[in-house]
Amino acid sequence: MRRSLPRVVRQDLGDRGLSTVEVVILAPVMILFILVLVAFGQLVDGRGALDGAARDAARAGSIQKDHATAMAEARAAAEANLEDVCSGPVTVVQTSQGFEPDTLFSVQVSCEVRGLAMLGLDIPTTLTASFSSPLDPYRRTA
Image (cartoon, rainbow, N blue to C red; front, top):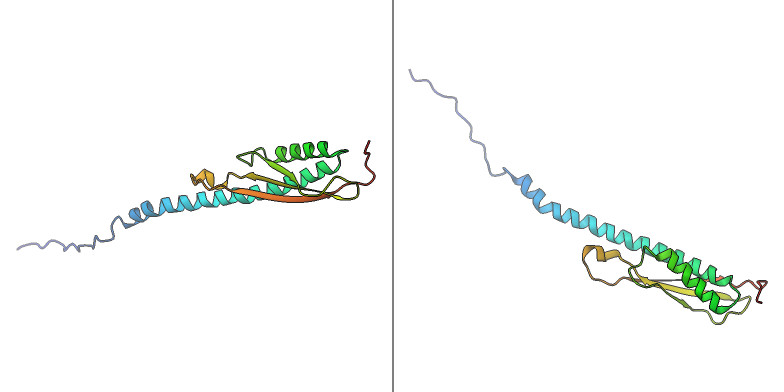
């Protein structure tokens, strides 16, 4: 009498290894997506730092006695705030007219933020921010 062996059901091997292929294809896309999020996060952080630097520069300049000292202090305040944010020089320009008491001292601060450079994209990202601070009419002018 012949013994019959149990019949082995042959499985369909068409899906075997498919998850490995999916991971190999999707992993670089996911890593690139995360890097883009980090780069845009740096741009948002740079925008906030630039706004704060413009505020500090206008305030530092508005409490000085003369125009030359005001611009020097405004530049120093902006550079101190942006030393680890900007990849190039920090530019501080006065946008208000004159330096008379009871007026506004307005500055515009700009620099090139790192942002997308970390991804190897050579896209210049220059951000600009402005702020005004009143000149105190009772400050010492002599």
